[in-house]
Length: 87
Image (cartoon, rainbow, N blue to C red; front, side, top):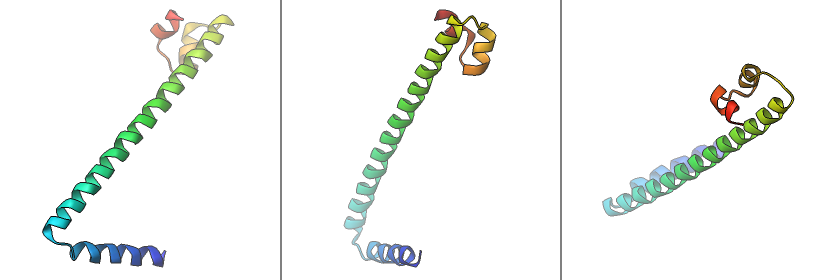
């Protein structure tokens, strides 16, 4: 914990010693890094959501084959009635 605090302090000290041009370049670099991380995080969360949806569809399909009512399937899978009817 203490090491982390000192690392942060050294980073701040280094940043304040940069010239205006170096700070601008550093800020731009960090913005690029954060933007890329956000894009990656969004892609991962979208892929995970798509995977959960596809899994819910597969489960709903099996439930429908076993004769469960569409309202029950919708309740348990959180899919819409319309999606289940299309299966």
